[in-house]
Length: 187
Length: 369
Image 1: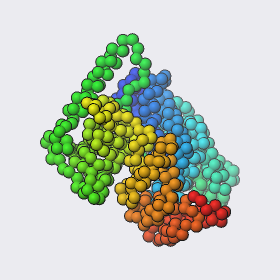
Image 2: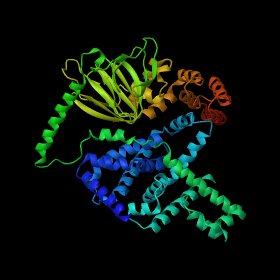
Image 3: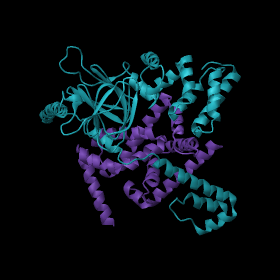
Image 4: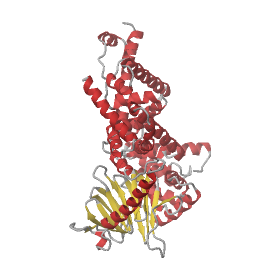
């Protein structure tokens, strides 16, 4: 198992090195693997599907331009996560300056998603995304890996190069922070 | 087990972890801890929902397709200069050949050999909609001339149309005079007026190309393919900043409903006025337009509250929330929308909020918008 994991890690390192040297196919292969992770990170921060998609596309282009500066192949996922978070921050700024939130949200509320309380769900999602955005970047990355990709503590630890204990500690600290922020907002 | 210890364990138990038996026992007799456990469960479910919401695998392919066209920002040094120049020549030549090769040109509406072209039935007096044209939804202005020339390829010879392309089926190409608009999966509008083609992108990315160059546009941006009088070849695709954004603003203003709108030409003129004063931000422009449309806009919005399109009804009730506080028509339309049991809950709630906004303004004595 360990050998298999290390083989796959080595293969990924090779892909990253090729991407750093300007190989578009290698870069495409790498980001395809991270599609869910990238989207989850943006969505977690923005709470808006359209903005999240745009942010991921911006992040992808930005990552392609900057990947040559990546020194440590093993840090690719964390590095990509930060690129996505920055793109999401930028998308969030545009949303605020564009003052289109009410209109767009209203549109989403009117989507014929079903008789359920779509507007309320949207509002809850937006509040949660606001709280996630207030967390440290590494916490956002952890949450996306855990909740979106369904990775185990050990898998996350392997990918981020930290201990399982650190993963658990940071994850639950982030979750507790989120709960407290949402509770405070509700009260 | 006491509550402090139970709370500590609950905090450190993820949604995929087994809950400690002692905690389970404690929860049975402790409503406060049960509440806490419920909060964590809800939070875990909300987080999973948030991260998964709207995810559609394969969407990245759109951006990756665009990536193939982008240069790498890298300084060209020394020996690489010749290689870069050669690559540039090849690219320009390739583009020329690709466009020449792909465009049979003078054939009837650019039909591809071996493909049986079909012209979309669009009358000169009414707009038309098509749910599936080679994987795209198309809403076309009256009098538009659109021909399906190959799989996922249409030719827009004249008029204007809004395209919504489902991702994942490969590139969708709209051929226009002197060029092409290629989209992997997005929502965009194209208008052809004489020698000028304008493209506005609502979401995703599109590529404009002609023999003189290429241009990538993303959501909220608009561009133009044009040939100046007397020029033998068209100008390179250009980004539009302030001028000629009617399609962009219309598309973003009233997605999918724009073709049904009454008094289109008046709105267009007004819109141009708004856009010429403001730095271009389609959403902001739309908002301003809604705010500045005056009595004419109010009348239109009142009629839109019973439109077939939910988005249009929603925009109408949003807009009417900014009506003058004493506007009887706006009040009546909002009350009807809020009390309509067959209306979607989201729209009813927005109508209620708009009514409240009017009432608040009336109470505070500020009758303006």
